[in-house]
Length: 183
Image (cartoon, rainbow, N blue to C red; front, side):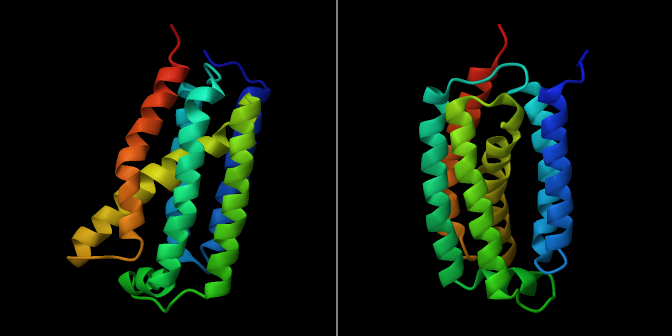
């Protein structure tokens, strides 16, 4: 049985705030609505991993930081290949305002950098932040770009850099699961 404490309530509060932010941002960048289920999955995953056992930063942080660095390259590929036009077009909508999209991503990446510090310092109650990046920014991002490319029958904005996550995502997930396995 899970006992309510700061390691349960603080991540729940972070998840609730993230859901509210994504809901508000989705009014302008409607594709971020997909992050709401990712937040819920991240919280459930947190309860089954980092909540049970805080991971060793030496095993997770190097791959986490590599994935974050690739995310900057991924953002650049999306920026250069009209992601803000192509995604809304798939949904039958007008393009996103570039400034909203850039600000949203830069704020998110700032939070994910803090996620690296959270991993390094082993701050358990905030581990949902790096976990969200691993699940949504790495795993979901890779899967989504591949599925969209299949759907459109060819290249889709951000695909090439997202393919790198096909390797890094499973490695990172394996390390998270190995590090948080309760023996």
